[in-house]
Image 1 (cartoon, rainbow, N blue to C red):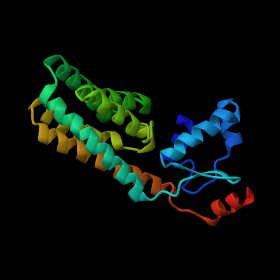
Image 2 (cartoon, rainbow, N blue to C red):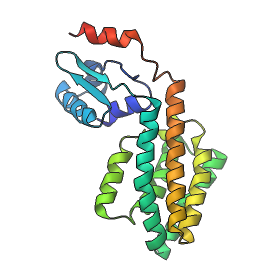
Image 3 (cartoon, rainbow, N blue to C red):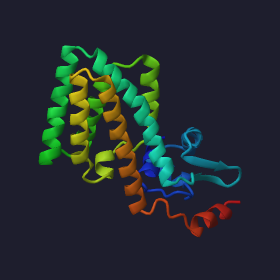
Image 4 (spheres, helix red, strand yellow):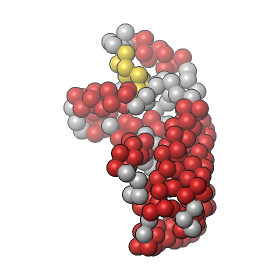
Length: 220
């Protein structure tokens, strides 16, 4: 499921494009049964359209769909950041500072690869999200799964912007400024969504062509 989701969210599969289930099963070296099950889950997430006797295709998404998802992610993440500003203890704040310092060094010097940057980003947000109640953390995990896992490879240069955003979030949390932390986190995810939509547009993700429609008709 993550494999197909990433193909969609990084623009490898374009909006409206038919999904070749056989190619996916061969790429993952699994039978087609788990691929079909994964596509059902992705259809519930709004990323895939399933049509009887026509197979599966990437949902017709717009830039606004992408930005809106990140904005929603930002609202819930902002709630977690506000709680972090109110509740994180000294040890957790030290951990957050340490992760940010390593992220800052990596984002400035470019010494770490995209996977390492992604892990530091994950660690930064994880420390913050742990301040939220269990149900909120569950929702955050669900929303996180619907954004590219390889964001720092997908959106070139985003690490430099994220460093600045994280600094603002950290400052507000350390200061105990719950409203400032919420606003900084919401702005961070809003900007992330706008960057993702711009990158997908540059890759032609939203350029729906007649070829996609033809491919669907061929399976009828």
